[in-house]
Image (tube, rainbow, N blue to C red):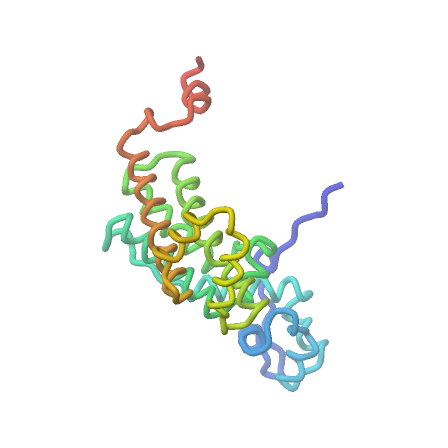
Length: 247
């Protein structure tokens, strides 16, 4: 039997008690711990100590740690920036969103452990989702393509940034670039041309290399979506077109 879905966003917000503590203070304290110590260090006990409050006081506002993480995740979505579709083209909206998502994830790497694990259905997440929806709609995308296009951009950004965060967590911020190149020269001994190409075209600064990869990939994703929009039915998967036409 499937576990019943529950969310902090589907129940009524409880009014503050006489102590003066409120949900916003709890979320702010959680964010401070996450930014300074990481996701693994977060606990209701630590939050209570930070706020000089007992666990009972915290649980008046959040039923459990999962609810707290939902609240914190929505705070993350509220940090993202993208122009309204009335003020910019759809490509400009999506480009701004993608760079904002990348930068904010890198600044708050704890979110890598929440996206995909905790539902993003809070007000900030919904606001950004609708902003992207309107950008794609006004560009001329229709039906499910609107959400597939939005998901494609999101998947690209996550696919680029999540490995960056994982690698930084594993080895720290200091990359042994020369050591990596020496190791590659050994493991690519049977592929000398490939290694020579790699050394010639790849920036030695890992930050520059990652930025270049992100720029290139994002432009390719947006170019592909623009081509699909321009070509219309010709770019649809054959099975999708057949199902729609009843053939």
